[in-house]
Image 1 (cartoon, rainbow, N blue to C red):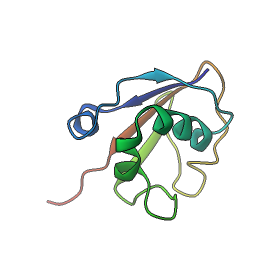
Image 2: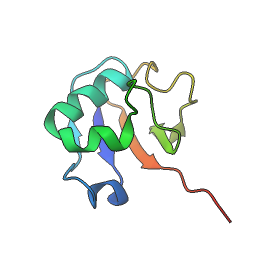
Image 3: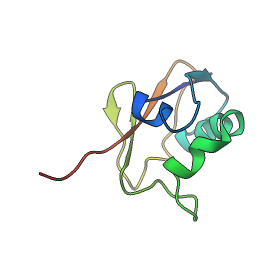
Length: 89
């Protein structure tokens, strides 16, 4: 089962420690994590269920593209890291 890790800055806003969940895609795995930690869902996804503009997903250290992110296939041994993107200057 994939492991989902929310970075510390997200954990400040909602309890969401790392978890092992079922899911064949990054989106399916995240939905399982949101079932465990519902408060973090609105930080990660918008009202349409799409990844928020300021969020990034990494699988085993590789950034997922915004277009394929939630639909990307994941294996049982994969680690999905959810983090906020920083911008500005």
